[in-house]
Image (tube, rainbow, N blue to C red):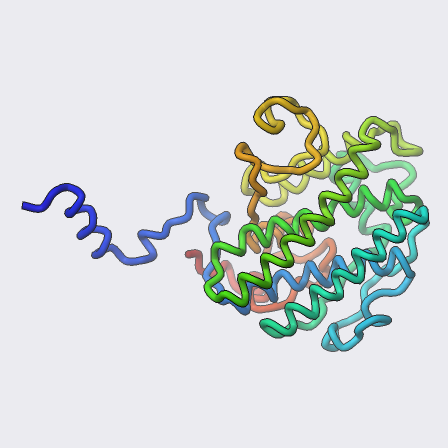
Length: 310
């Protein structure tokens, strides 16, 4: 007579693989059925965004002035503009921009590239994000290019979502080379985000001029907006939190956003599209990608109801 453990083994053997590998998150928060080529190519949309965001702020010109062939004929960004940054901030932002060029090259070499999507980094577009986050129309409108602190607050919006995507991507990859690529990308994206958050934490209680709003308040509101748009619970927190949400429930500082076990939060491509489009809907483009992102995953979201989940 078979023991219960033997029965369990037989049942598991007979069950379809898809029923065994049910993700822990429900509905639209599940990982999707995609290849090792699809995943990094979806992430390439954010790498393009970050490349233009950092290079334009540092130099007033973006990827087309450095490695134009990486864009594969995609349109230049809307709103490329040099920011009014202090010397140290400009140097670090410049470094970040060149790092993003390297990321594009690494993805191109490993899985092939996609065409650069239309990217909108106009100050007016960023101002809309901040208005929505704060729940009011800021007066004057938020201008990320006006000074270093405003630029860093706007930068707070971007790299963190990319690292969430890489965290969510790695368990779904099959090939060693792709895992190696994404692990390397994740390391640098995490470092960029940590640098930005640490800078902002140093000024946590300072008001952002001319608003009577602190740096902490801005980060908290932006994080809440991303959670709202993502539709998959709390995966984002500001640079200060109540102690019950801090590391081991003992800190109010939150320089690195992480879960109960201090692990980075994962996000799916659908969540990332909802957030970067600013619409809360992966089928409806807008925000940083007014015509939608590129690659199979993004385009299927735009043209189909939803991708098959794992």
